[in-house]
Image 1 (cartoon, helix red, strand yellow):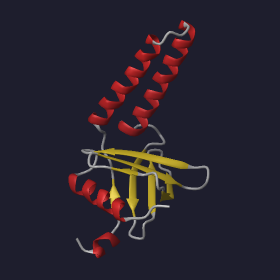
Image 2 (cartoon, rainbow, N blue to C red):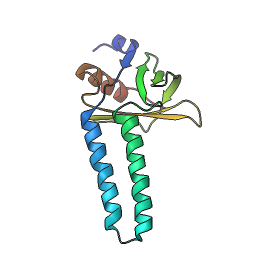
Image 3 (tube, helix red, strand yellow):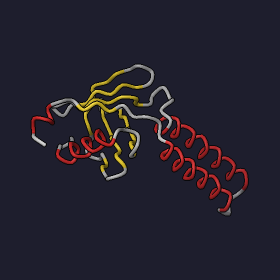
Length: 147
């Protein structure tokens, strides 16, 4: 692949992931169950279980099902290394990629920053993008130098 191919923008338009949804449901269901196994007062256990369940619903809606208003439904990696993200509610932001972005074969976690206070995250597993776009994303991220 020539370096000129990196000059073209890379458009990420993830689809809903059954795999990510399943993993998150299992993890959060386990968290709720563990709360009741730990020897703490029942009132505190119920409170923790409600918090864990609410967190699970939020995370699944935002990152796996992409139905929360602040879900990132499109991201464009521009040739100069800049990023443009669009949320489900229609808001668009120019953002920069952070160093704590994680790249592996089946999973990519993109962490963005708009300014000092506003941060965004995007979890991508194999199958949310086409195989070619997912491969191009991993290659570009490994060769780029985030902030």
